[in-house]
Amino acid sequence: INSGVNIGSGTIGFSATNYVVNENAGSVSISVVRSAGTSNQVAVTFGTTDGTATNGVHYSGQTNTLTFAIGETLKTVTISLQDELAAATNAPRTVNLSLTPVLTGVTTAPATLGTTAATITIADSDAQLAFAVTDFTVNETDPSATITVVRTSSTNGTVTVDFFSTTNGTATPGLDFTAVSNRLTFGDGVVSQ
Image (tube, rainbow, N blue to C red; front, side):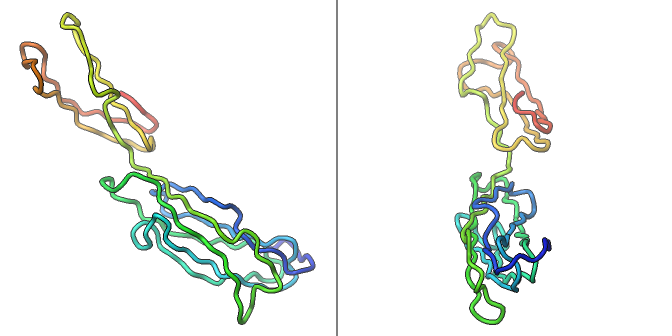
């Protein structure tokens, strides 16, 4: 973006200190902004390092020199993400971002550095399904029992799970209860059934 020339070299920094993105987004865009002066060509080095995310497993790391032309106020860097397998740890992952001075060629000086450290938080996007409670109690005279399955973490997209009643415990199928097997389908945004 070119927004006109302001006298001076300006200040270069990240537009935010934390960028949050779902792991299944495919990529995240990071904005590096230049403010309060754009009359010189200046550069800064952008880099990524592992936080709790691993380069090549959760994201594709980068080290780039970002050169701001006269009048230029914004550079955008796109970081590719890899969606974890559903069986992997369902926890957020982090990537460290840094801006450092360029000392040769087109340099950072006389620009100053603003926010030079930021984080990408890669949020887990895998749905987790579980029973609402661990023990369901019903009176013997009740005609049926309602068993609730809940969906946590992500509620995006459609998720299915097969449900089976078991014979564990002291109840006898056919005598004390009717065995049930079913497939539950949770549509987009559905959190319980």
